[in-house]
Length: 97
Image (cartoon, rainbow, N blue to C red; front, side, top):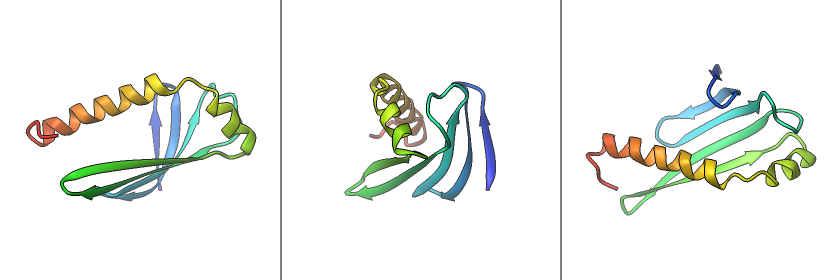
């Protein structure tokens, strides 16, 4: 396991599993989060007919933490993150989507 310290967004965590091009599992904690404990984050990618689907699963430390996080307005941040990911991938695939 390797610690990953991110200063942008005030987020930190530890990579727990990395399977290149298929799976990333890590912990996540925000400096100013309003719920207890680390969140376990799992990203899994699958390919079918030339298209890749990324599934993200979050497991919060407590049910109360999950309930608090579900009240956050995440649509903007998630949309921005996946837009940036699509832009990055386009530079590596010659613009193919």
